[in-house]
Image 1 (tube, rainbow, N blue to C red):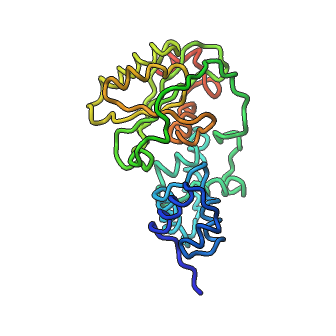
Image 2: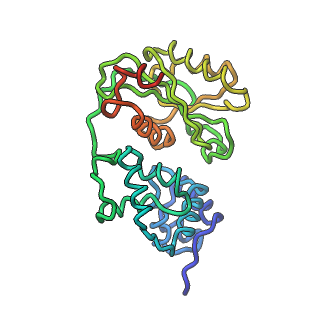
Image 3: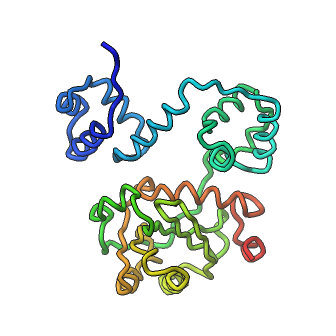
Length: 281
């Protein structure tokens, strides 16, 4: 029997059943698919949740690239190598220059196969680093991310932002960056803050509010760091704010992915806020 690819209807059913706690076998029986199909589908998920729309988009992109021969001409290899040496990531290279023509995984394969002659030190993710100890504290009130509407989760409309702060990797500076990442477009803004108290964050959020029309700011999602304890003041401006669960960075994936890319453009190591005025002005 010829294999039939999962449809968006299949994936929507998987999403509902998976969220309700069904096992792979139970889901397979419910939608009339082999359990190995469901197992492979859920294994591709990089977070603790399954998003049918995102899974369908990934499958469509994979099919569009399938069967194409990835010809590495000397000109192509040289262009990619030059960008890697300029600290571009494979994801950036594909997104900016070769979207729908080349997969970033192909670039990684070419690097590991020696087709692209570049040091692994040029790659942004070179291994785990010890992060500064978290000392900012948390709070336990506010609306959980579990209560945010599906239009936010599925990135269906512009205006839903993820908030975060980025500190110096050395932990020496009180200054930081307030990060605002729009979920649908991945539009990304970094604003300087002198420190991280909630008053500084509220002032920075107000700067963002003054810079955009009301329709462009529909909701915020953040972690429960104490700098976001100003959430009630934000909600008074008719902007909903939701809080991610502890140890669940995947719930704010746009922030987590983009913060590392921001560091590529800042000097002296992964991130130096000792010189952040010089780096950002």
